[in-house]
Amino acid sequence: MEKTTGQKIQLGLFVIIGLLLFVLAVYFIGDKQKMFGKTNHLTCVFNNVNGLQLGNNVRYSGVNVGTVQSIEMISDTIIKVDMIIDKSIFSYIKKNAVAIIGSDGLVGNRIINILPRKESSLSVQAGDEIRSINKVNTDDMLNTLDITNKNAALLTADLLKITKQINNGKGTIGLLIKDSIVANEIKATVTNLKKTSQGTTALIHNVNQIVMNLDQKNNLIGVLKDTAVAHKIKNIIANIDQSSKKINSVTQHLDATILNIKEGKGAINYLSNDPRLVRKIDSTMTNINTASFRLSEDLEALQHNFLFRCYFKKQEKAKRKAQKAKETPTEKDKKY
Image 1 (cartoon, rainbow, N blue to C red):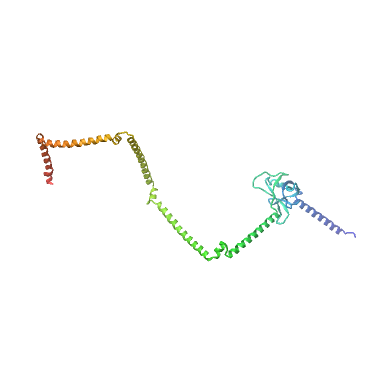
Image 2: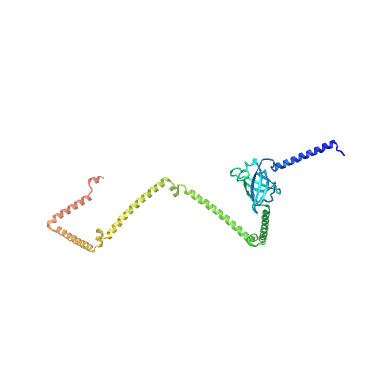
């Protein structure tokens, strides 16, 4: 059956629309994969790509800037990843930037995140290799969580055991909780500590009051803080120091004198240490006493001698007259 013109037109429109949709799909997919824009290559080396595939996105600071073009395994621990990056982004990516493999969402496809650093650096060039960081994968995290869960279970069992012992009154804590006598003793101890604290507070207050009183001028320390008194005390100490120096000088002279006496120098040592001189002095004093006694006798004899009797009588009369003159008051004294 021959198709009508309308059917041909409809078929042509369907083909044209299909071609347009195909072209648009290819364009958007190619644009997303950076197939039609100006791009350059960057490489990065990982120890483990953690499921990264060709065509996965590459992001810089959270913005899609390219895709993964190839994944090449160099060795069992070195995997080289080639990335296609928009050429306009190269001026923003620095040589000290680092690459890390993450996921697009919680359970999405793997992506490469390029993270900038705070330190300033030069911009990357086409074909440069940037440093990578190996992120902890999900399996390692699950293993760590498994170990943590086991440790938590052991810890819970130990806590349950300790709690049972406490409830049964076993151990120090259980004894403190269950025994009322110990509780009362602890309460009394706390009361005593409280009283002691209050007494200590009062004592500290009294000490502070004493210290404040010491700062006043009506006591010794307050007086000592006075500059005038301090100056006087300084002068007294200086005078005492000078007196001490003079006493030391006198002591030195006395020491020298005593040393000279001990060494036999001077008259004092001669008088104290020579027995013959002592005997001579004793004999001389005896002779002087004898001569004095004889002189008294001679004077007594002279008084009785007729040649000197008149002289001594005149002397006696003069003494009596002078004594009488002292005992008799004068006319001037009588007036008074």
